[in-house]
Image (cartoon, rainbow, N blue to C red; front, side):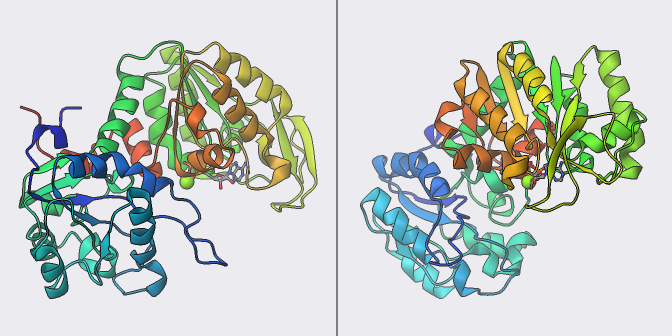
Length: 396
Ligand code: ADP
Ligand code: MG
């Protein structure tokens, strides 16, 4: 990574404003934090700053409060959990700027930790308002970006703030960027991408870009039907993006021209309606019954994809193979996840749903890297510049 990190600057006795991603999920019924992965993910950076005697001011958003104070989206429970993990006090403030925050951060000593209230309680955060960014920057001497999950957004706390104080990357950002770059820049081949999810339109840029880099591209998910239509097959009652059929055809042509092995499923699991309890049936991809819709890749496809995956040295996965949320249509996705977890190869997961599957199956530790940022990892794989990263200081 060509950006400075916290290792490259002196943080001793400095006030360090750290943008982290503490956008944790809460249990609908108990209101407790249901997954603390994102809290644990910031520990390396926080611990480094503690060891180096910094004064730590953390800031984050939770959810989409749209510029309003929403009690269920306060960061107070996160401060409590973080304090438990660090075994030291974490002071939660009632706002992220203003006189109370200035007071709470005014007399910090090295080793103190303050967690600011939800940044998105102010509409100025997402609007990247310069005065709001300036007010955040005024709290600290140095800025550290460690919120990979929001690095693809140019918000006040991810981009705006960097105009006013020296700005470097934290360890989570560094890890995310280097994992994805290592996998793509000089990959161990064969390099295989597995791309799934709901729609072609979400993944066009990714597929387009991957076709220039990978040896194999395996397609799954709802977008399969748009590709099948491009091949001239009937897709029954499946959801198709009619305006993307031409594009799917062009992607297949590009694969041929680049000698990339673009693979569609040869069989499918289909259903008579889009429902958890729908009847599941298996069919050939070119023989989808008129009243049926594509819900998952079929068992022959799982086996064909598994052969290709097993022979690969690097595998990137973005997007589930089917409607994995419903048991009848989860087999394609869970089979691929189990296989990837069993391999010695470099295995990298990006995408919100994809990471969720791997986490919920308890397989995250068995993968080389499971990205903490769905949208951000997609942007990075697409080759786009992340505004929250671009704004940081370059290495000398
Ligand atoms: P990711 O978050 O990993 O990038 P996406 O957001 O692109 O993945 O897509 C995830 C969603 O795609 C899941 O909710 C899943 O149910 C849905 N999906 C997968 N296969 C199908 C299908 N055949 N039909 C409809 N939806 C599908
Ligand atoms: Mg998603």
